Image 1: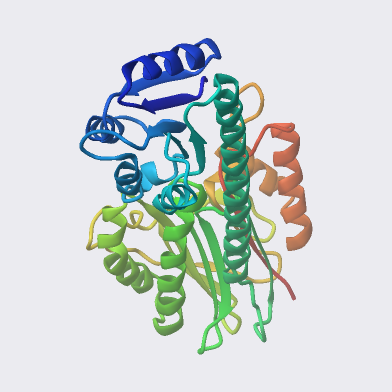
Image 2: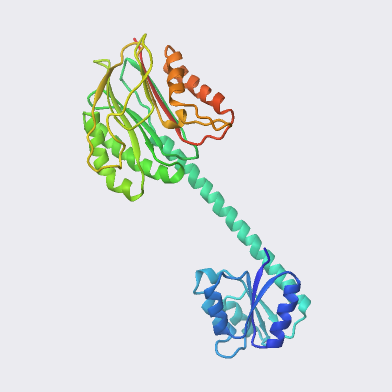
Length: 380
């Protein structure tokens, strides 16, 4: 794209000559015959890449025009070359103080003007490139920090809880994502297990995820019923979720080492798979709706055995809905079958097996959604 130059000069012959010569060089040139009309033109359209500005003009002189440009963030960044017969040092100092980048004394040779224009545009482009690079580097550093913070906030702490092996991991589709997990012992000795999926992905979803994680950590620590946790968290988050048009699916379970059971409530989260020891895999159905649909929602609560060999796999939809190069979907039933066939594996080995099955299916296709998996396996 050609550099755009505005020539502000009250001498029409000089103005036309400059436009002719610079247009011949490939620049896109506009004219203005006085300072006021130049400002009106500049404020009404996209800023040019360079302004050639006469100093002595009727009405507003060049110094006043340049000073006015500095009051506009968009125009203040446009470099200005003063064109003037006033060659005294004080005149030049006044011009630079007003915001000029260069100063060319009349009469000037057109070759010198072209050289100054070319040099200043190259320098401006270099500065913009450096600025974009620095901005990109800052953004990358901030995203890396955000990803580190999000990973840190996802905890899987079993502590003194016995009788179950637990593996949890989240692989966002981008640096940060909308999935979360949180596994931590409760004050009553039970193990709180939470997985959630915010609609969308990337930074917007991650910002919502932080609020959801905070709310769920607070409520699961204080409330003894998973169903009550979901009802309260949904009510508290509803206004914010509707404001940003987000839904959240959530699975909350409490594992009791004394009872060897898992009591859960499921706010529309899928897919959750349960395999009793020696039995076949089945999908654990939702006991209520996702967060953000209604401000008041009731959630059912169910209990599963979690003795030796019993298996619970809590997965976000990024696994079942993974696509391959042919745009085929891995599928919910396929995921159930994979878990069923490998249910005798230890939790860590099963996680690796499921991940390998997904990787083999997508065969290098870029991950399109966040993938979060929690596996609980009862043991002796």
